[in-house]
Length: 179
Image (cartoon, rainbow, N blue to C red; front, top):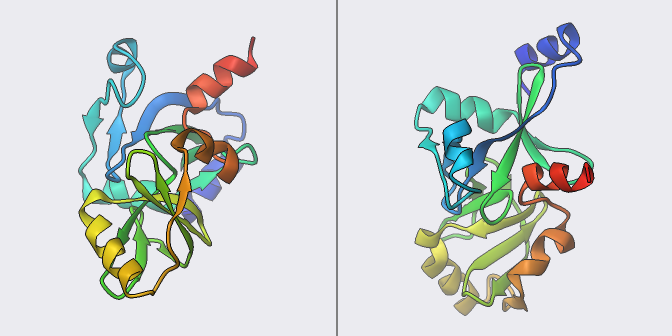
């Protein structure tokens, strides 16, 4: 976490959380979802504005964390901006040598490979579960063929969040908790 963020937390400790306004798609792209976008529906149906500014993306990446309930958020100064996830908290890019790096630039060590019913490849790692970027599925297939990683474990996508302890939609999670 950036030092300026830590200082803001100390200065303003009681800023309310923000939900529904930031999302991460299955290709590692961040989206800003204003009230009009949210009114059109949940993520990923209503995506919002694709964030592309390198400095902002780096800031979000450095301050991207999870709470004790598995809700991922961006600590924006004193405010937690919870993230709507399309598939998983991490989106992995995979190099031909097997190096795995997240959408935020975090290097990970693969623990196991999972394959869901739609053919999507997930990697469980020392940082948690992530979806392999679609452009790197062939690289993963090659690594599997070469025996670098064990054969993929079949899994149903609907059980991944509970199994790996993350919340796809903190906005819906909070709404359910208030009932």
